[in-house]
Amino acid sequence: MSLLEPLFVDITWGAGGSTSDLTLDICKNTQSYFCLETQMHLTCTNMNQVIIINALEEAKNNGIRNILALRGDPPVGENWEAADENFKYALDLVKFIRKKYGDYFGICVAGYPEGHPDGEYNQDLIYLKQKVDAGADFIITQLFYDVDIFLNFVDDCRKIGIKCPILPGILPIINYNNFKRMTGFCKVKVPQGILDDLNEIKDNDEEIAEYGVELCVKMCEKIISKGIKGIHLYTLNRVDSCAKILSKLGLLNKLSSKRDLPWKSRIGTNETTRPIFWANAKELYIQRTSDWNKFPNGRWGNNEDPQYGEVKDYHLCGISLGSNKIKKKLWGKEPMNFDDIKNTFIKFLKKEINYIPWSDNLASETELISDKLVELNNKGYLTINSQPSLNGIKSDSRDGWGGPNGLIYQKSYIEFFCSKDNFKKLNLNNNYSYCAVDINNNIVTNSENCTIAVTWGVFPKKEIIQPTIVDYDSFLIWKNDAFSLWKNEWGNIYEKDSESYKLIDNIYNSFYLVFIVDNDFINSNIYKCFE
Image 1 (cartoon, helix red, strand yellow):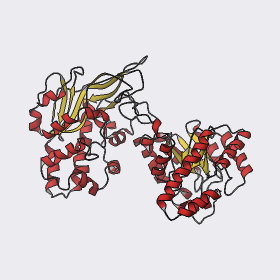
Image 2: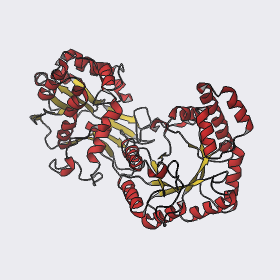
Image 3: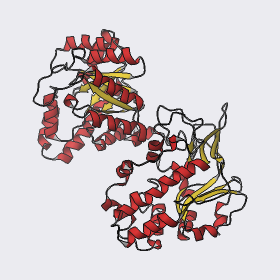
Image 4: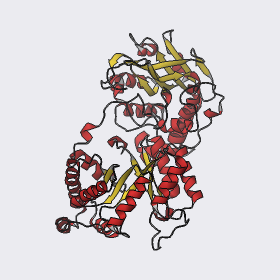
């Protein structure tokens, strides 16, 4: 979904608070790791003030700024009743959040174009006005399939003084039985023509899904034509139909193809500098820096600082890299020699496989140097990160960043694993900054205690922006992450007594991790040192 660039995503809170821990975990991941602005649902069901405060504090501590305040549904088979007399309705929740947290949270509330299933339409409008007056910033509606009902609801809201944005809740039809169950549960009126159409194809899920996409496109086109400036799509964890709807509406054509910075920054921080080492392993970087409170000043200092603590939880790599079966298919069922290992790196550079443990993507600028990187890997230098030199390219060009009217510069950079014998063959002169380190912290370098800007941008009326750096102390910390991926992600998919595991274990114990920066960005030829 992040590729669709939504304004925000929201995560439901299960009936009776049944998914509260999972909801918080998913919200933290989407907000921090995937940089999606996240709205967390919060209900009054089975919640007292202590639990509500704990949930809001957890959200606040993880940069989550938006809450959808709901009364909530009871667990299946139970009647709704308040666990705390101070939290009977969503209105109570809105008032509490505003009183305790001021403007920190953006608050959304639910609107019901056909009236709440347990209420009456006109009384619902009055209640909705109270929620907005208490501090709600915008409204998302219950699902509907009659656009005129929604438009009348908006008109009625405006007549009683509700001026905040009202987003229509659009639920694509994917399965006939689910559609009937959902509309019945929510007491949603469905035009007879839609029911007749669906009845003819109800046993064909593929046709139902196609019909659902076309219906939502027509609904959204009519809504947008009436001046409504946002659409809220209920994905129910199915993004495919939603992506098709956005595409047919022409909204995907407007997605930005340019980066704000060379990496995607964390929302809610003022971070403007990042070591290049974690460029392709963002989950490890954000995990390692999650407790740091200095953004960005003073960060790349003393490597004895507790902020450089060990990263022991690699579950996020499991999200992106999949099962052992998938990994073996990608990286070799049983690599038996070093050629098998280096060929895996080459397949990644040629886009024959999707990822390696150190990178799950190839930046577009890598195409400029991919042939050179393949040559290096053939020579035994296993590249995991690199960038070409750039000398004053326009910031709004393909490999630019930071918006229009700027000029972008880069120093050539290569990071790789290699044997110690191969490192000795390198022709490293004073044009290059470099560091080689093994798992036991044996170091060969000419850049001790150095910090080098390897990417910078010049923009009108701004100080020079230096978003990507090579930092000696940070590199020694990244070394722990980089080497651990050999074993934790690659080696562990094989039996401990297998030749494949021993091969990877030998690389882990005997190779160097190396960075090289060519400081001559104008006449750069970083590959000369490998000849």
